[in-house]
Amino acid sequence: MSRTELLEGFLLRKCSATDIGPDFLKGYCRYQEVDRVWRKRGERYELVSEPFVDDWDAPTTARVVGICRECAASGGLVAAVFDGMAVAAFVVLARQPFGSRKQYADLLEMQVSRPYRRKGLGRLLFRLCAEQAWAWGAEKLYISAHSAEQPQAFYRAMGCTLAEEINPVHAEQEPCDIQMECLLERFFAQQNEKTN
Image (cartoon, rainbow, N blue to C red):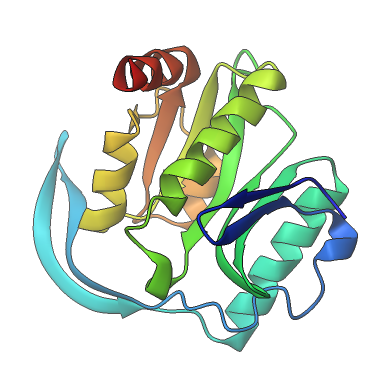
């Protein structure tokens, strides 16, 4: 079993590849009703109405479980917040740096199950990823971020900005995502200001 930590009725655990079985995300609810999204118009982004429902079917969930297992097996960080046996939120941070100076750590997944949103779990997991990336020597987190209004508001509140370098694999796989980065030194300075 990996490191565990208790927080307000939840359990935060770093997961090894052996912790991540086929049922790792059983009961996880990705469901999100999207009303407005950010779309690039010329050189700038605009918030536009584009209603749809974002959800995972069984094959998508299985694919994400595979990403979690592969990342943990290759030395990356997979951390989950549990409510009993159910995953309430999880993150996947790749170990392999990239970028022109190997400055980026890749935040592959950052997900909070629908019943647990707006409880601070995303902030907790984002900080955990920032700390791990910094320990690995990264300067920045890289996020291929969902373009919906709510996730964009979250990432901007964490200090994320448009990525200076674009990861072409992410941009091609998710063309509607917004490629973002978080400068870790600035993130930690902002977090320290909030606690003082």
